[in-house]
Image 1 (cartoon, rainbow, N blue to C red):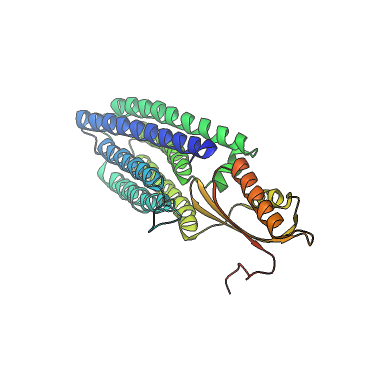
Image 2: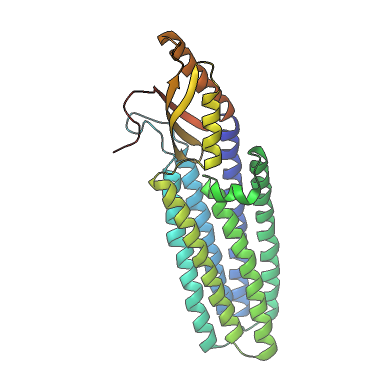
Length: 314
């Protein structure tokens, strides 16, 4: 795969690797703080960051496996494996982290507060800086790719088939919000002596992670089942096909997202009455070439003359 599609793949791998390294560093910092301060909460936070690191490992595997070349057994490639791994990451890592945080919150409410608030504040501050670095990298990639498609970053994030980018974005955002919630809970607990605030913050963090898990799980399952291109992209493909000299109209258009950087396009074309067999063949080749040049992620194009069997399953 080449062109923009290849660049997106490289950028996504770099974003996932950076996020994974940041989460690993944060997990180590929280673990050290937990051991030194005797804080069970910080040790739990270390486990949560370690779970985030596992998520990045799964996303990295998703990107690597989806890049395998097509073979006889899998003629359309392995792109959908990215969605399988990402769905597993959402189901196991985020949900496990969310349930753990909620359980730990209730335990903190009944079991008391922190042993050393200062150490916890320092680690939370360092964690926030590291998460912000990872988040800034993700934002930079998001803006770059949205500019390429001439759409707003929010719209691009909603429709992008690169679910690893979406996962890292939501994970980093949830981590930053979670750190603020944790700091607020610790401050209120320190000021009042009531562990309710610390435990309540942990519960809110768990709910936040569960929301992220649902959003990512839905996005990946939708793509794993088989999702068409967004309406704006489909219309752009239709217009590109209809621009051919011998093409009168595009009567039917089907698109399928095979993977983060692989798309299948199938269409029934109404060629002009004056076009003979040679002209139809030349027009089809020209249309396919235009599509591949403008949209490098379109890897498979199947064009059928109007009047052949209907493309839509009955």
